[in-house]
Length: 87
Image 1: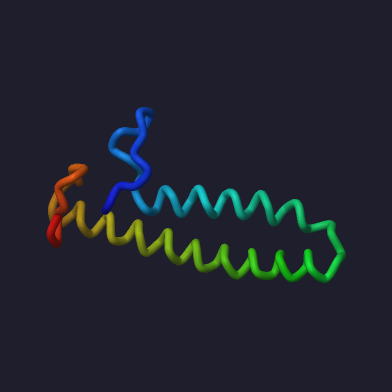
Image 2: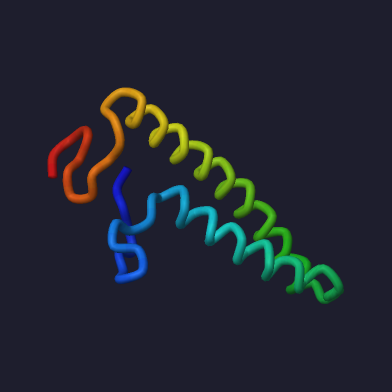
């Protein structure tokens, strides 16, 4: 899988599923703060967050599946060197 957000702390970057998981955790935290807010706007935002969480969970599973497939087929990834496709 492509690696994103390279840094000194993580020079190889993050895999897509790691980033999606971090985003999902942030949305869960934000949504939990809306639970007690009875205003219609807050309820709508919470409903939207719940939909987004479902899409993110589906996306995490798909990204993990792709990583597992590529690893099984072509071995461990090397940053900067694609296992499939072109650089």
